[in-house]
Every structure is written in structure tokens, then in C-alpha cells.
Length: 344
Figure (cartoon, one colour):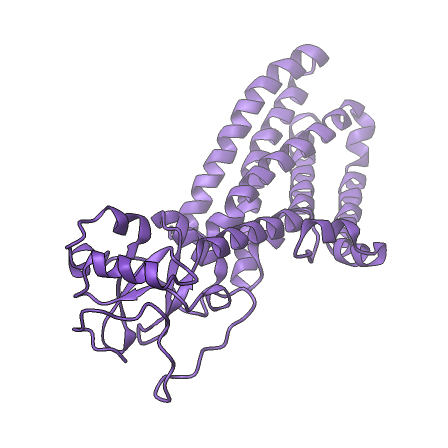
């Protein structure tokens, strides 16, 4: 290994020695899978001019960052290439290095890597082993690939598709039976929920017989609850993996947001229903159900992804058909309970 006090250090990746620990296991969605080992390496004592000369003489596979290393190839800091080009040529790297920077281990999930890059506005993220030695860098091209793949996964899971092809075209062109196998499971859960919804409506058959107009507002109530919940799911699915706030704080905030949305919708619905149907108790029941549905939908939209995340599943599975049917059941039950108490 090169002496860190030397005035120059090869840009190419140093060879592994027998003393190096074995490479850690890498799964398909880890930082190690995307890391590029051939990156510019330099020592703190080198000048900007020396490093630029090395980069021109022997370009590395990933040129996004210059990694400043010390003894045993331990990562001391980074200098983005764009920043390096603006520095005085006689400045030493120990004066220009960014000492506080994000770094990950080979086992770190790829989504976390992309999130760190976005948060710190970096085009690449260094990867180190447990001893702090440089393994490589996740380059900008890999970060773009990660972001695209994660978004494709989330879109499919929002729709209740259990697996996704690497490319969107594959999902459209694969055999119909395979598509059926990917899409059907959560829809079967939705079918079971629909049966339960039928039992809920049947339980209030007497109420509907006395006041048929009660049924007029069921589609609108269910739709609004689904729409409110979908908004929460879109925020929660990825926000839960990045937020450091307590769950109780997040739930409280979303519940208050849902209640406020419900109050606004109820304020618009109450006079409209009362004037159109001349039935103010019914109008009040519909408005109250909207307020309750808003709070329920936002809570379910946040709690379901969190529960699945705690169970080790991707939180995106908590949205789509699963969250929709739960919101529908609770909204229907709330509506008929309120109507039975107020109208009858």
C-alpha cells in the first residue's frame, strides 16, 4: 500500500492483499452491487495540480469524486471533480477536502444510497467497509438507474402488481398468464373486502328501506375517502423510510390533515345536500361522515405502510388495493353508523 506522505499516488485501484478481509456479501439491491472500484484516489499531501495531472494521464472508470485516502486506504474525505477544477493549482488536498460527507457500506440498500445523494446534492456516493477503507463509489449513472427502478417498483405496487419487470416494456409484453400471476393476488384480497362491504350494507338494509336517499351518497363518500388515502400513501410509502420523526407525531399530523380536509369538504357538502334534498339531518350525517372518513383515510394510508415496513415488507405494498379496501370498509361502516344515529 502506498505511503500517505508520498507526493503522488496512482489513480488506479490498488490490488487487494491477503490481509484484506473478504468482500462482503452483496444482494441485488445493495450499494455494493453498484459500486465502481476504479475511482480516483489521492493523498492529503498532494496538490490539485498533481491530482489533475494524474486524472488526465490515467482516467478512472468513475470520475465523479476524488477520494482522499490515508493509511490502509482509509477514506478521509472527498473532493467533487467540479470543485477540484475551481481550486488553486498549488492548494493541497488536505485544505480542500470535504471531511463531513455521506458514505455507505456495501450492504446498504440502494434506495438509501440514492436518498443520501439527493439530500447532500452529490453526483456519487463513496462506499467503505466496516474498517472505513474505500471499496468504491456509486456513480451518477447508477444513481439514476436506482431512482428509476425504485419508482417503477412503487408504481407497480401502488397498482397491486406483486412483481415488476426490469423494464416497463417487459411488463407490457410478458405472457398473459404471467401478468395474471403478478396482478391477481392483491385483487383477491380486494374481492374478499368487497364481500365484507356487501355484508356491511346488508346489515343496514332496514335503514336503506326507510330512507333510500341514504344510498345516493355512498359512491361519493367512498371515492373521497380513497382519494384522501391515496394522497397520504403517495407521501408515506417513501417518506417513512427517510423520516426520523416518531410514528405518533407522523400519525397525529396526518390525522389532523385528514380532519381538516374532511371539514372543508363537509362545509361544502352540508348546505348543498340540505338545499337539494330538503333533509338537513341527512345533510349533517353526510358531512359528519366526510370528516370521519378524512381522518380515517389519512391514518390508514400512513399506518398500513408502516406496519408492513416493520414486518420487513416494502411499505409500497400497503397501498393500492389493500389500503383501498380497508378505507372503503371503514368509511362505509362509519357512514351507516352516523346515519343510523342522526337520521332515524
